[in-house]
Length: 237
Image 1 (tube, rainbow, N blue to C red):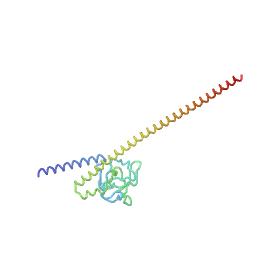
Image 2: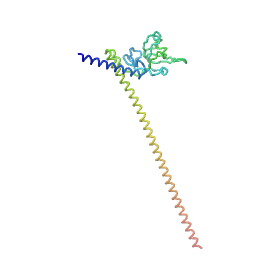
Image 3: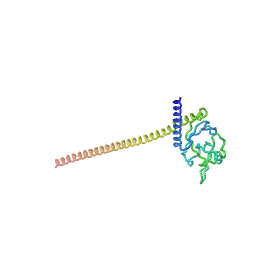
Image 4: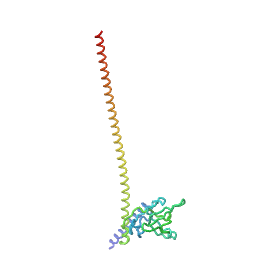
């Protein structure tokens, strides 16, 4: 019984450490204290469904946010009261001034923007831009009890992050391959051009040789005729 308890404690510690490592890794990669949220309302249907998990990119500066981006932010009205209610809506309008960047958002399913919730959004309320959506994974938080649900979500997102960087590396290798192929094709084109120039030179040389032969032949013929004419003149004398 004592051995089983020790093994159980050991497994719990290993799981806790694994979750902590994954969590810290996700925070470092996405540049935010909380890289994912579970959608809890239908204000963004059909882009985001209830229980979808959104992955937030905190490294995207607020200055780079544009109309059409889906962002995560604190409700400005409640934030002023010291409450942190997280909202995920789409940027519908840029209200920036010369002094400050301000945006207005709106839920895709909402008829209009809501004052105090959708605007004014400034950099202090901004949390990040939605980078990925994992459909319906949030159901795990309802079906399973902690810490199993958090472990599964963390593993799923960890796999997604690895895939993300693997795709980037693949694109980089593809670009490099395309560049190398372009250089090879350029070399082939240069070789073909040199061959064509060589062929042209050979043709020109052949033409020159033919012309020299023709001129020489004509010269010989003229000389022969001249000789015959001289002989005839001698005969007449």
